[in-house]
Length: 390
Image (tube, rainbow, N blue to C red):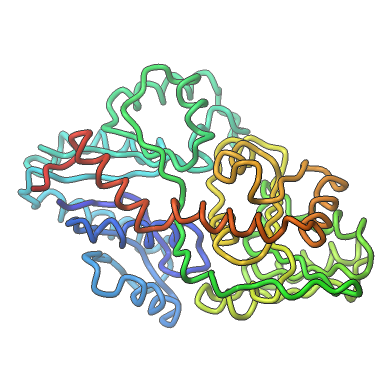
């Protein structure tokens, strides 16, 4: 069965979307699927990292070197041409938002034999329910919801990427297609070597964050919390885009909260070097989130799974997106306040149960291994009529 992923990618691992999709579908390919992506790259070394992760898997890239804005239309046309010529009676078109799903539904009747026997499948990510989120162009939420309800009626199925999305789906769209809940995955073995140092009263205690600086993730919470802790606590950050804007963002927050000498910003660090160069030796791994719907109900925090695979205590904001994955006795859950997050960091460093919590989260995270996610995805596709593998 061929899976056509109908969304453009920039093929480098600075993009969380690329990391998530490539890893998820490389493992799904092992169950007898051929997966086709399209997109561009600009950096040959970064593209080679993507190719190395794909390896011998049945994953094909329709790719051009250059900016995505230049090649997007041509590559999409190439994907659709390939789809139109595909005589297979079993095909899957995967989208990741309502606009792409609507586009696919309009195109299928025009694709002749290619459109016959095809099922569409929409993944739900942090922007998955746009009518509930602030509208960039002043759109009418009620009209958007009505339109999206029509799209869902014709959609072949949904992949929810967190348990917290399920309630929103059922409340907002009582008539919806079948779905499976598949949170973003992780390769636990890759992160297992990252360990916390022995706790010494004099410190230092290194609180580490990895990820992007988008507003809804509330990275500033880390700085505000650290300012409430004594000078033994230091902040290590690897993330942003590795550009002048990211450098300036960290420098400005460091100065604003009087944390000079306590913040170690590493810039963007390649995923292949992240464990050895950033995570290992941390006292705590931190996951801040902001008070917004994306953070509270919709995101599937990839960095949470990575952190849970280490031998380092984890502090995360106590939102449904987190608690539904971690339970109450693995990760140290914190209120989304400066005092609450700072208190949880202190508990993660000094709590006598920190070792037991780490052991429980390491056991739990195995449920979210890429291989396990792919197995469950394949079984759902078979059971729901998405494919007919022998």
